[in-house]
Length: 261
Length: 338
Image 1: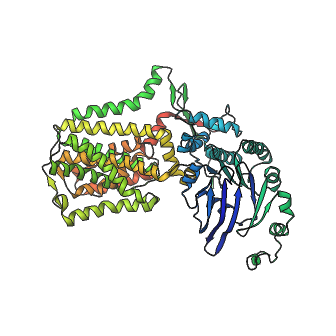
Image 2: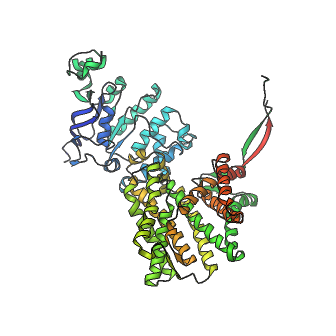
Image 3: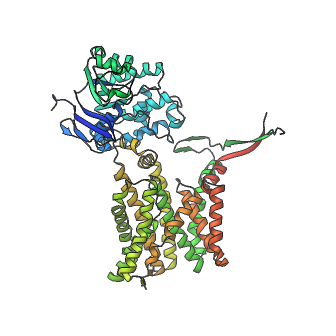
């Protein structure tokens, strides 16, 4: 099992009404890998994340994690097994101080099982993690209400919330959108550090330059289908990818591409 | 149009406690000590003395107040994790029927029926509402509103447990004073226990479920089992209230599922303020005696009662408790606008 893929997605499929959001997407992920997922708006990236993490139930296909099928399981069951995620539109508890946001994952059974976060130690663990994220522990920032923090901080707080779960796989849904250049520059080394320590990361991103610098492999989605996969520079050389990104109307998928001219 | 210029504005200042960090108060003087202790100790002492002073009719009102207070606390506890109920009567009725039937058919004394009814009522509430905790907001409220009505009709038509006539001559408490103290002590215990629970990490998760359940799920926390746990606690408290009333009135009837027990706790929380439990307690301490005092007015009682409620909700939507707490913790003074 250790040598096999950590996460295996097989022919995952989801239809919303008349829209094929995700169609027969398959890929595998080894432990410690850093995978980028790119694609134009509406290409099914976020739906794919929702399908893997259980927030949306698939119409077909399988998600196999560490040799076990987790398809269609509840989000908390999947999170419990070690797949953490961030949200494109950050989902936080705005009425709580920033560090209290981390108490929720820290008080989960998973963290308790991994030997952390007894009552009373959780606050310290939360502050430690936030300090890593650039919420300086000696400032007021970690203690401020989450609702009063600027957007860049909220994104990093959401990342901290996912990391607090001590995940095996971390899925980042457009973490960098709305972050400033300096915030991206300071967050990137952090992700690389976690990756080097063995964390498997899937990163969905529109900021290709930053993404390509860190990922081992990228996968390109368009209209819910996987159109390319491989090393970043190889993938971007492909005709289909260029067309999908430049928006030239060509008959890649008869009928599907007809509307984008 | 003449230009109106404000010359004065209100300035609010926090009352100085020398050092205060989240849950730790560093008290520097007797003044500070009293400042912190009085709003907590005074109501407790008052409630502990009242059973000795009030006898007869007003003694009954005190028990009644505590019973409604317990229902209001149980409502507020459920609401803290996003379960808005319109059916505290369900819990109340479960407790009443557990205690009443155990006493009538098996001749068990209140010392046995009360704990059994509390646990049984909690378990039954959690089991019955467990399957619908996935419903949110008004849909959950509708189910809780319907269930007591459904059970009431079932008892009415099938005639089980005394049917429409009910069961009378149940075993009373040894004395009225004991009943009053039991009501007051459990009421105070629940108030402080709930406040303690909600400020712990467990309570934090409950509040987070109300604010954003998907974010809680992504933190590997089974929100449905947490909601069912909250239902059990709320159900047990409501059932205790029902069991207490049944023995105190020595009567068990369909009225245990009456709409009053669903609506009045909600009204008490609306008046007192949601989320702190102190608001729920204060609300019922105001509302229940008020509604008894208005009894002298006959038919107009309900109209005046409703009027007071509507006005208070419009004027003080945050609730009386939050208003009073703010006034207590902050100085207000008028300063000139420069």
